[in-house]
Image (cartoon, rainbow over all chains, first blue to last red; front, side):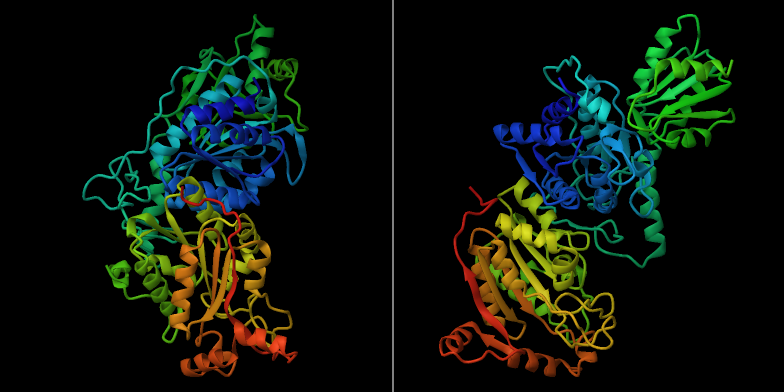
Length: 360
Length: 262
């Protein structure tokens, strides 16, 4: 099965029943599969007039209490940024699939890249936090799509599946479990206000039509949900909470693989380049190189870097000019060496081994 | 139940300027909604950004005050995900026809079963009186200091051409006709578009020799041409004055619609 189809199947299994999207290479198969599958289970697929509208529609869908999703690639992701900020600020749980392609601009529609990793974290204006997952297999396209819904609901944030053209169009064997774990957002507690946080900093969810009579606004709002946009303290407290509710859970929700923790030379990767690193390690059985594979990139779990106590150097193959390498360097004293690969093709394992060899 | 029961009283006082007509339109809307026996918890108000878009914040239902121009796609998401909801959109001329123009024509094309009430004050009121796509030719705004030299949109013709089932235009002076038009729109399956020309003495009238509320309302009333009268003039081969705008029910049909309750 193709990665994009596995993603759609993951969404169906997770109970996604509303999809709004706009065609864009190389993500369109996700929309096409949702268009085939949703009507058969009483769900709704709608093709919108652009990606701004798609993001708006899934936020509307999410507030009716239905798991909602869209899928896109770079140019569409850029258009979605406005309403992604709205989703973050209004604490709307929703899922965005980004099958990354070469950018900037129209770039390379049919070729892979990981150029939207910083945009995923910082792309909309203002401070906020989100969750970004990165699959490196077709199985993970399924599994991490399910996980994205659960995390979006738990933290009431937009969750991004930051895949790429390689994994989206890759065909591999996938196993669908009979049942997947679906954890809905926690309901609001009696006596609490719609935007009043609990101890985990996340307010209970108040979907429409259930008597909550909630006012949802993109203006700075108080715990009732009412606009209060000129209160400096209230604004600061709200924005800090929205960042903290995600960031402080970064180690608890971290999802990763550690290989050879005693190594001195350590690869760190996520998404498609993880495949190249794994192959490189298989190709050099005599070498002891470490590998950290991240399935959740944002919030960035910097504590995992301590799992390699002997590390002298971190090598970070990415299909961009070092977006996450930059984040890693923030947290360690050792040199962090980006191994960028632009152009749409994956790193060649022998090149990774050569890069590692240079550090010995 | 009465229309008053729909107000979120703990949000008062409102932010509208003295003399603003938006409150009149909210009143007419709530009168219409209440008279049809709609329930607060089955109804969702959605809006974008601008003076008009503050309306849902004063209404007790679940509501979405969204991003500039995007009320219609948000409303589309609510309605398509749960067709049982009654969905009403408040918008303004800038929100709907400038930044939201593409969403407007597509919502009309889909003929999605929502009611769209556009408070057309012919200006960007919230941001201090800049020209909008509905500012009349020659009118002064902060961005057209020598007079607007572009041709304004006819929002009703646009809605009708794009496929909306019900299209009507009134002004904030015509409260009874407006309330009836909103009632008609709420009941008609498909997209209902009701344009309300509304006075903005603060940011439109002030710069266009209509400084006080009364002169603005009189001007709206005097420039409103009943559709029936317009049709009669046309039939008689008489000219339609350039400075008049047509009011009345402009489109009323039953084309297939999207998102209608089953």
